[in-house]
Length: 238
Image (tube, rainbow, N blue to C red; front, side, top):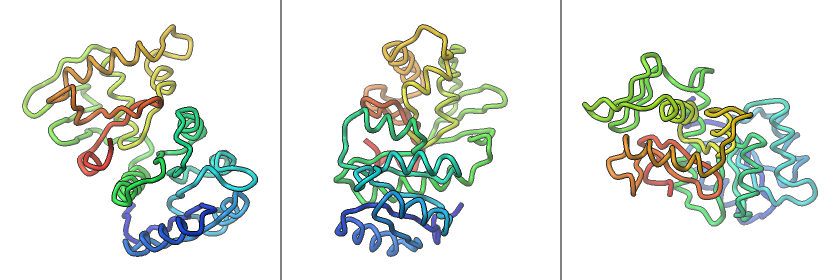
């Protein structure tokens, strides 16, 4: 899906932020709908069928988590959460309920626009969640042949390292929680914890990153999980 002309539903109860987001998004050729409560958000979504939702968690009455829960019962519309709630548990709760991304206020408009473009690109991908060959800069992952290269160099990964990378490739530009990765790679019944995951991410970075201390491809979302970066969003994500 092209970002230009996409319809975005912005849900926030702070008038100044709502006006600022609406002005900035319209200035970048988006169509914008607004809502200030959970009920308005769900109703607007049902009426207008937006391409993407930008959602504040701290709404009056039922909060933003209730909106995520309601929308996910009916659709897969991308949801980007904007909130002053910076605690890890709030991020994890929103992502586990089905939000696609999370930004903590205050935020950069340029970063928000990058996240919007990334979410809309994800919608345009096939249902499998990834193309047969994923590329980001010098990194290439051939999912059919299970072949990973960095530039002209083929990278030899263990089965677990490859499976970890494959799961991240399925959700490019999106935060994947530690719990999701542990379940997908080791299984729900496996004895694994976040330290286990940290060790394998470190091993994977040693093999694919030009500088593992300053990751170019696998970004850490502190207290939440990891994100596989693509070329366009690298500069905007910390």
